[in-house]
Amino acid sequence: MSKIWFDLVTPKSILFFKPMILNLQNRGLEILITTRGGEGYKETIELLKLHDLEFTNIGNFGGSCLLSKFKASLDRQFHFMEFIANEDIDRLVCLSSVDASRVAFGLGIPIMNFYDIPLSDCKEDFKKALPQARLTIPLATKMFKPFVVPDEIFLRFSLEREQIFDYKFIDPLIWLKDFKPDFEYVKNIYLQYNINLNKPTIVIREEEYKSSYVDKKYPFLYDALEEIQQKSGANVIIIPRYESEYLKKEFPFAYVIEEKIEIQHLLAFAHLFIGGGGTLNSEACFLGTPTISTRSFISHYDKYQIDKGVMVWINNKNELIDKSLEMLNMRNDEKIKGFLSEMEVDIEKLCDSILA
Image (cartoon, rainbow, N blue to C red; front, side, top):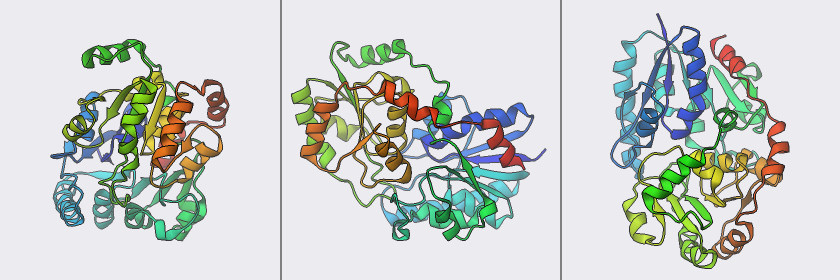
């Protein structure tokens, strides 16, 4: 029997595709999952284990240096070429995986590409096209994207309109629509790290500064944390993006989560979330938690959330401190109900489109 190949190279891709993987398995289809992991980047492997998904680890992240990234990518493609050539693959499904897309294209395997952030821009400035977009979108057999990203962007990447498939939600809703926050789960984390349950909690997530689509590590979030903690009296919990040791040394007043957890429970009961990424920002928004984005750019789905008033964007230290104190514990539960009612998740339809 031929297999549906999923290359899951980010934590988000695991959460996003898990409902589709389960749906396809329930249809009797065989699934092959690959990932990458190595020193300094183990999130995907830990999350796949947490969600009890079988996988094959091929290649590694490559670090922050462009030369090492490029070498790791070429090495991974070489190993993919040998590995996939011996598998009976019907099609590839991925969130703009460069390595898997290049190999699938070279081996004549149809590519089902999903992508919500082709540009580091909320307009259509192609000078800000992400490297992953340039290297994957033109290779796609079918291109799936959320309704907030204009079709015109993908048409400019040389696709035909009939190759572009919209879905009516922003990505994290696919795994949050049936999510039930569990405070007992959060209490266990608090007990493990000796965190005071009677204080408000601010959860922090760094920007993915080692990624090829981020210019550099911007300091203002790190510079603001101690003053935010002192003025608010809150617990500050940091979810590391990469290594945790330097964070523990630099921020001795904060709690640095060192193992992989189901962070959605923590986000749901946080009094404020400050995030430099995209996925956790959206998750916090959707769970009604007051959310500040410190990302170095605004994507299309960021702008949609900002325009709807469920997230604010800040890019300097003083404003971040002031806004954090203002927004602490100002939940968006009522506002988010209307926001989410405008979206619809149809996993059956997505899987039908993948297989058609």
